[in-house]
Image (tube, rainbow, N blue to C red; front, side):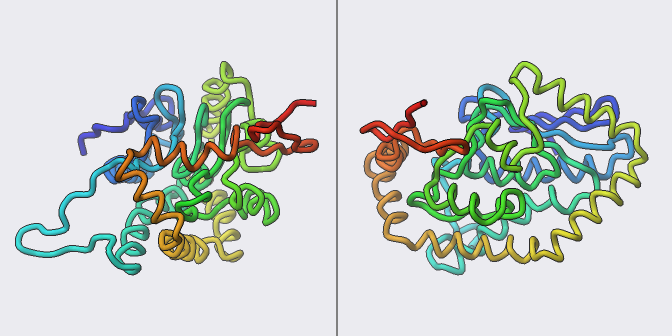
Amino acid sequence: MDYELIIYEVRDGAAHITLNRPEKLNALSQQVLEELNHALWEADDDTAVHAVAIKGAGRAFCAGYDLAAVRGSNERDGKVYRSNRTFDDDLWQLEKAQRLRMVLFDMHKPTIAQVHGYCLAGGTDIATLCDMVIVADDARIGFPPARDLGVLPNQMWLYHIGPQWAKRLLLTGDTITGAEAAQLGLALKAVPLADLEGEVNQLLDRMAKIDADLLTANKRIVNIGLELMGARTLQRLAAEMDARGHLAASAAEFRRTAKEQGLRAALTERDAKFGDGRARVNGPEKRDANGRLIDG
């Protein structure tokens, strides 16, 4: 496959995948997911690769799904294919995209998400399906679409940070910093942005010294444990719950505003009332009249 929206490189025993749509903050389209899926299976098949790192070009890891992408006609070659007109059509489309992402969980070799800048919405789906997440201290991580649009179509937050913090963040769509994400367990660790690349590369170098078959065995036993805790079933239910969420009145209003006034206006209308949109992990959440956190 010739990649257009990602960069794929293999060096020193590791595959490096870069989401390469910096002008769109690496928003995920169907094409991006298909290219990412292909590259990950390629890395899993390549005996020169022991581990994989995924990062984003430009100033963000990934700001979410490409809501501005125009879906083509569902009529091709005289046949009518699924659209999003019914609940089942929507769920079918969500499950189709989910299968592309689940390679991160299913592939044998370990994966690292190298997160800087924004990691929002669909970006968190990619990151939390990786085996380890290493973040910049000042990264911004969250799922703002939970405010009016839907549900995470992949649900690994519960397994990383437990039910209370998963609810706290998903019931408000608020974001946390990379440092806070590491404190909660959503990330393995947080480092200054200047050290992020080196931190990931040194871990890749260490795994390159280990027999790839042993890396596989150790990854898979942990993931089997997650499956025994219901993780795989929960992913299917997450897609179904997202389709249910798409039927909410607020989701219909978001789509109407986006159609009539543009996507930026719809996002502004949703998020403005939440101030800076942040949660605080340590200490009280005191806010000013505009909903912004007050230090001290």
